[in-house]
Length: 263
Image 1 (tube, rainbow, N blue to C red):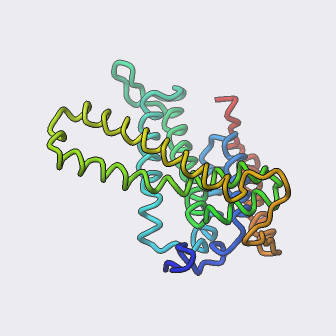
Image 2: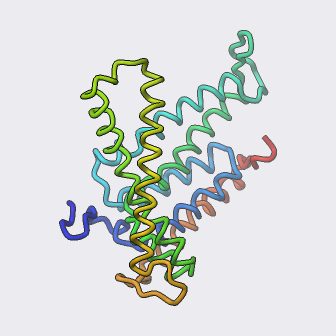
Image 3: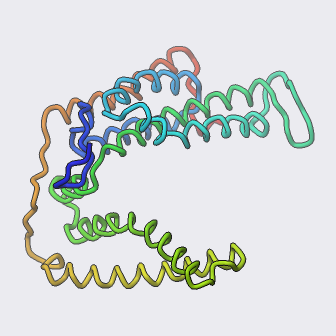
C-alpha cells in the first residue's frame, strides 16, 4: 500500500517498520562473517536461521520472488561454473578439455550456491523495505555523517527513477522524428549521450535550487523527521549478529569450516 502523502510503500511486517540503520547493520552483520567462509554447513545454517527475518520483512510472496529472482538465477549458474572449473580434489567424475568435475569442485559448487543465497537474500529483502529518506536521516543524525553529503546523495537517489522515464521519452522522441531506424548500437550510444547531457543539466538545476534553500550552509541544520531508535531495533541487530555466530560455530564443531583463504 502506497501512502499518498509520503509516496512510500507502507508495509506491515515487524521488521519493515524498524530503523533503516538497524536494517543496514543487520544485513552487514550477516554478510561480512559469511564472506570469509565457503562451506555448505555454515551457509546452510545461516540460510535456515534467516527464514524468520525474511518472513517478518513484510514482503508479499510475489514481491519476494520478483525482488530476489536474480539471486535464484545467479546461485545455480555460479554453482555450475565452480563445478566445471573449480578446484579439483578427490574422485574425478567428468573431464573434457578445460572442464573437470570432481568431488572437491562439486562440494565447492554447492557451498557457493548456498552462500550466495545466505548473503544475498537478507541484503535484498531488508534493503527493499528501506526508505531512502529514512536512511539519510539515520546516517546524518545517528552516524553524524556530513549533512551536505547525505542530503546530496539522497537527492541524487531520488533522481535515479527519472532516468528510466527520460530514456523512454528520448526513444519516443527520436522515433517521432524518424531517427530511430538506425543501427541498434549507434542508436543506444546516441541516446546515452543525450541522457548524460540531460542528467548534467538536471543536476545543475537541482544543485542551484538546493543552495538557494540553504542546503549548503555550514551551520547546524534541522531535520523534518527525527531519527528514532527503539529497543526493537537493538533486538534486530543482535538477532542478526547471532546468525553468523551460530552458523560458524556449527561449521567448526562439525569440522566443515573452510576459511576462504584456504581455498
